Image (cartoon, rainbow, N blue to C red; front, side):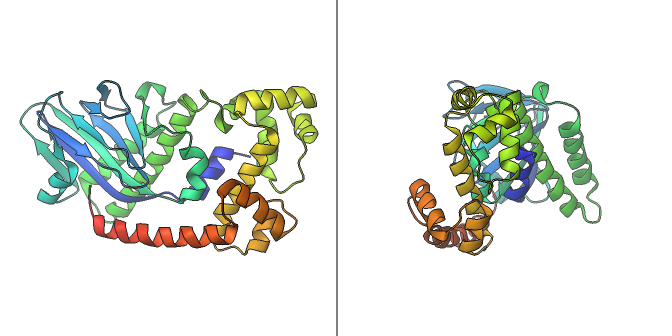
Length: 318
């Protein structure tokens, strides 16, 4: 069971906006992200990044990428102290796929994409991400991200038939590759399911659990998959993941339930598919974690999704 792959698939990532930007020093641009995520990949040159979550400016260069979560704002500059303009101001003055801005100095090129996805499906991953995640080129295994970025550049430059849809799919792939690279480089450093996947014995139990989350799991049964005693498994699990096996199983069942609820699955079917024998049992567990029952949660998220879609339609670029 590929837990990360399963989650990335269920997120249904889609790019809402893509831009290929070429800046000449001196330049400074302030970015906003919206309510989901943005990816910025340096294709050429370098830049300083300023953000509230950084104690000092951070230098990024070709091959590095930033994953920006939620409403986190950030600024990119050729040098600290230059005049800064909002990204939306630049977009309002230029058109075309390649956007150019700045003076007459050194060139920095970056690819920027804003993304939307199933927030319920993405929750276990996004909860581990800091507001701004930096993935260094040196931390990326293999040439896949670099190759994808080069393909984006070629499609943008050639602008052939169907280039727009090709670039959209490439940007989606680039975002998933960046998330995967961050998970491999940083994701296991704090307690959580990614750390669990890095523990050879605990990961065997996690993969079995995720392969059949509706099964009537016991600590002893999971311990057997891990090849450990019940007590040793329970203690190690709590240290590595920061919660007990029972707490972990319940939380993931409710996570899976939310994904199914957003897909329109009947509550009775949701209960059965995530391991609860009755609607009442699901309602009790769901209410304990989310503070509302599954029906009320689905109604609230449906209304929220409609408002978000309307806001994205009106917001345009930036």
